[in-house]
Image (tube, one colour):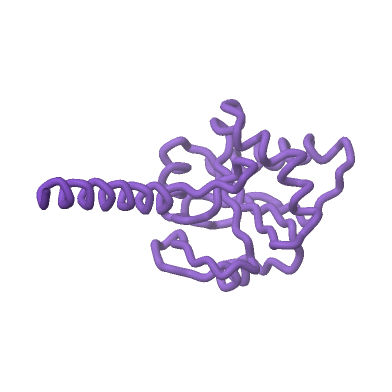
Length: 163
């Protein structure tokens, strides 16, 4: 009986540990945009794939952030074609969540956003694997028919900035 109890406790602990490890590596919002958890690892992934990172700075109660994510970013995050062109990470600037920055240090979302001088949400910032800006940023969201084209142009410009 004692062995059976120990076995089940061990099994439960292993399951909990696996959930913690999975949450540390990737955390997605409901729409499929990956939350920033470890930007050092994301930067390394982008470096290996030779693609830029697009950091989506959002806020909790930001209607335009929600619309941008629903209109464009979710589909991009779930598209194989876009995953070959750009790595997307979301930073919610008014959350209390900490994550690892590009140097691997623990940082709060608001402190990280201050490093990029984020004044308005949504803001899209294009960076290289070290977190250095490599293309013009997009501030705000205009649901016009031209937004997708502008976004594609900036992804191409960011890719060219890597060369």
